Length: 365
Image (cartoon, rainbow, N blue to C red; front, side, top):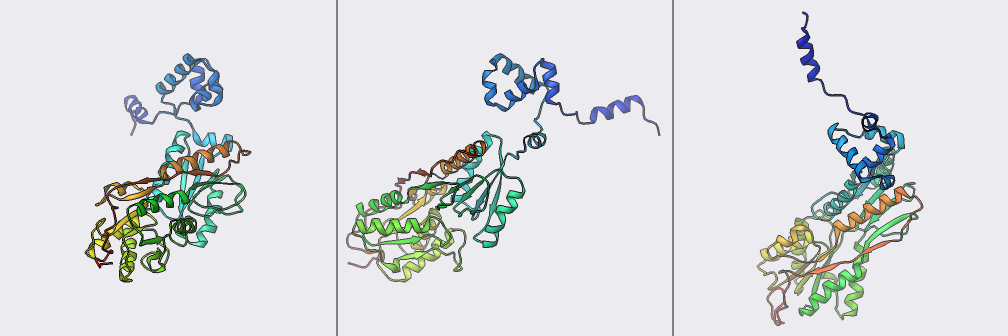
């Protein structure tokens, strides 16, 4: 069956238009492809190009609906414009906020990223760097994860702590953070304070616990070992922090029968679970027990009561890590020193003055 010329024309019209090349735009404007490329990519060379010319280029790009061929660009420059982000897990709170900051920064440079969650699995910790390197990533951000020593690419680590050669660390001043929290509680009259110590696999666990012991000693506070419980997940093995975990370990603290008037939790997620446990035990927060969290995730401001916490600038830490990594990729000789960020105490409704004649269990002192 033959088709008419009209039918052939309609079929042709339905076919997708052939992508316009950089060369076509250059010929249309009477400019060199290098000039067009410089304007589109905002390269340093574009600074010398008159604004009128830039406007002509951008108008033509819009008119022709030009889309850069990133595959060709990658092959030509031997670049992938992709990095890898390695995290313990992606869950509400810490990791999600950090990744958000990384993404905000990368999108400005039209970079993409892979996220790999290792869940503390040693095999994955050893395997992921190789797999991601084979996929042509240009650098790594390791979040709360010790970076390997045998990766020949730029690395920035967030809260990983270590002296690995060639690694730039983005770190929180844990000592200042702990001081803010404990000074706040002591000023409210709290002396019997319970603690959630971080997970064994978390890079911040030991530095923060050392800071707690050091500053508590300075303030004349005694830490009761029965009131200092390490988070390990609800099944006794390292897991992502959840409110259920905080609930579980808060009940364990209550079951000791020891007196306390405040809890300083390792993170906001566990603090939220602890508040539920205290309420289910018939205790008022903050009337009987004051609770301080850590991180200041978005949900902290919407709890009941709203959570007093130490703000860790997680989004900013992600932005700094991504920005530093992109600088290191652009200039391999650039090896900046460790970058410290500073905490802030956010006082809300989960803390109040300690009752003078009552413990957390309502027993007279």
